[in-house]
Amino acid sequence: MRLTDAERAMLEGAEGPAVARAMDLLVRYGEALGAERLVETNNVCGTIGATTPFMRDFAARHGGLDAVFSEFNLDSPEVVKVPRARTFTCHLQQGMDPDHAAAMGLGTEMVQLFRRGEAFAAALGVELANTCTPYQVGNLPRRGEHCAWMESSAVVFCNSVLGARTNTEGRESTGAAMLTGRIPYWGLHIPENRRGTHLVEVEAEPADVADWGLFGYYVGEVVQDRIPVIVGVGAPPDLARLKHFGAAASTSGGIELYHIVGVTPEAPTREAAFGGARPAATLRYGRAERRLAYERVNATARRREIQFVMLGCPHYSLEQLREVCRLLAGRRVHPDVELWIFAPRAIRALAVREGIAKIIEDAGGRLMSDTCSAMSRAIPPGTRAAAFDSVKQAHYLPAIMGIEGWFGTTADCIEAAVRGRFEGDLR
Image (cartoon, rainbow, N blue to C red; front, side, top):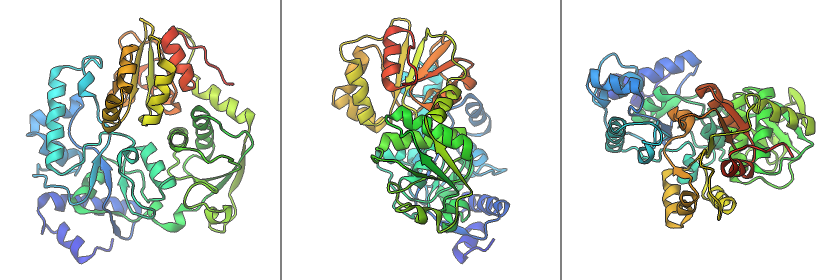
């Protein structure tokens, strides 16, 4: 790998041992990927700290959060003192919501560790967004900007909707990037790698947010880690629809970038999206494909009686919270059901000021932040079956927690929360 003089100096220790370890990791990582050089980045989204029992014990045995960062972010055989971040770094979701720790089955020791981790991150200059949707709380890189982001649903939104450039990074590469302002130049950082590969012709146009989730689930399963170019969409989809489409496509497959002709920034035309090349294959999305996606995402569901409804994967926007309030107004959550709704902490603060949180809480629900049930591995005790308006959560949480999971619209889920029974179906 070719390094600049500044990068070589970092590798050789001119900026301290932690930066040297970070540069060493990036060089090894880049060489394994076949990258010829690094690229500068000023936008990192990653995770640091220790909110899991394993990392908590590691911190206790090896000298605190510097030891955790050294081992899990820098792959360092020795503990190094971590300096302030060199570049803008935004923290993604964590393993708990400290304000609802008891409901999540977590004790005071875990809350204390969480608070120490936040203080550690803040001292490094890390923005404590604590969300899987950093683009909803102000992190909006410009088109063409090189980023280093974790979190599959955030990565696909960053690439596709914002037109910035990132691969799906991990805790290690983002930790190294925050100290060096560098990331390997490969994959979706390279313009020619961003061209579409598969044409998707829409015959059954998705309508609501749930429909866009099903559409993404089908496309991801068929295309896998390639780049779909979608034609035939009429009304431009809003943020929530694009968010759920990308999250679903990166769940059933490995999609990190999609193009919607006439909607997303790198697809003003079909020809531009493909870069003049011919598609490797043409797919059609109609009623039969929609039905197939619905049946597959509901594959674990059997019992209609539910004990848990989880909304906010990816984290809800303020508009989505307002929809929940409209659906919940004057109603009460069933006594045998827990309703948990997740949003970024900044959006939750607005929801409190606007009275949205009170409507949810008065109905018997919880407005939570900083995590989700899949990240925290936390669900209400006794949960056997749950309902979600997120394809991603319906795909992952049943496998993670050994429960049944129903997928439906937000309205289906609120009805289930109120009645204690899921009655939704594909309309």
